[in-house]
Length: 148
Image (cartoon, rainbow, N blue to C red; front, side, top):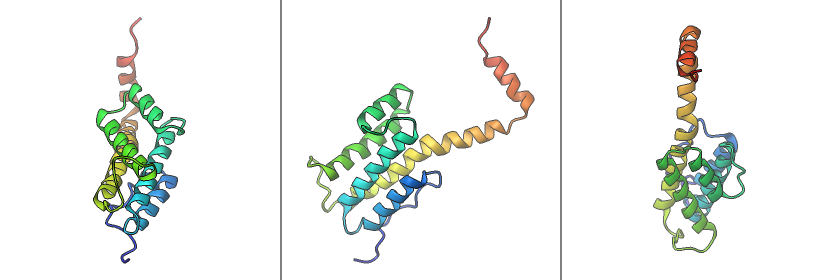
């Protein structure tokens, strides 16, 4: 079948290279195997949890720990959606992805969104904050220091 690559948006530029390779491979097989693409995106989520400081062995436990650490509830929902749909691609479940390309395509969007919220946004805020003059950064630090 041609084209070889499905209609997926490019990977977020801040996506770690290892995850980006899985993302691109998933895009390359989307037309032939939506199930295979969904399984690769799920693998990307597992690797992303590890990038976010979790063990990366059990996605459900990793998401639980991220939630306990204050993860945005919308990001949690996106992570769980990819986890559950991706699991169904690998293990028999209630979601049948044999011919459901649209569901698999939605997972690409979710993975990009998750990377944006967990990597890109914090990076951009830090870059801007760190560019503030040092005397202002010191004043902020003093303001936020615990009172004695």
